[in-house]
Length: 260
Image 1 (cartoon, one colour):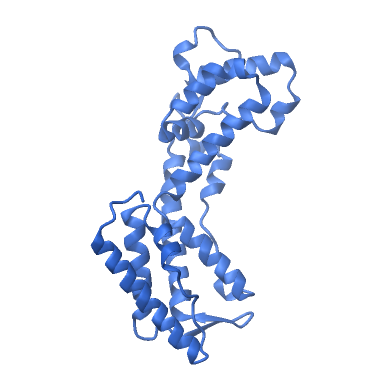
Image 2 (tube, rainbow, N blue to C red; image 1 turned 90 degrees about the horizontal axis):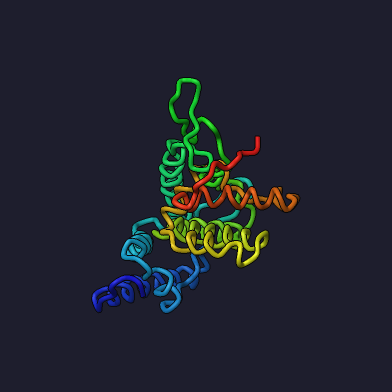
């Protein structure tokens, strides 16, 4: 467990899960709509990576004990019914997630833009920022537009619920960035030999994730997308030199021609 987990934490977790499952069983026995019961070992593993996750999830479960939390809530278009607690919690967390996405997007928008490490300036001589250039990166942080009234099956709601709660985790975007870094290195390996990549790969692997993300968001020539597969040997060599000038600027002793 990543967080410092105490006996008091375990006692609170057991009591909260027990109360939650007890209410679920009572609803099921009465033939009423109810959320799924929780497995204590599985739930414990899911929420103890950080203190923030632990506290958020227990507070979420504790809200199920509020008056009328168990009342049925029907989504209009397809008549799918869940508890009021489930509907409110999903909508609430989507809103919180979207605010976090907006903060990240704003950070991307004010990122100064470079090309192979050199500032890109506008007609006024000032360095451009990402908002002025546009980027597919922004699409990753667009707010989720979810109309819960269009929920068409209980399974679809549960999948949405799972996705929303996964994004709520404190390290969700950090882990996504780590996966981005790994896929970037994998894409490099697909185009270049181990020997050619030795220095570049070592540099990228050794970077903190925040440093890696900063470079990816700022420099216009980090891209190694599908188009590179059509490069000839000369173009691939030029591209590798360009990448090294971005990632290992201290080794850049020559002016790298930039292909227009």
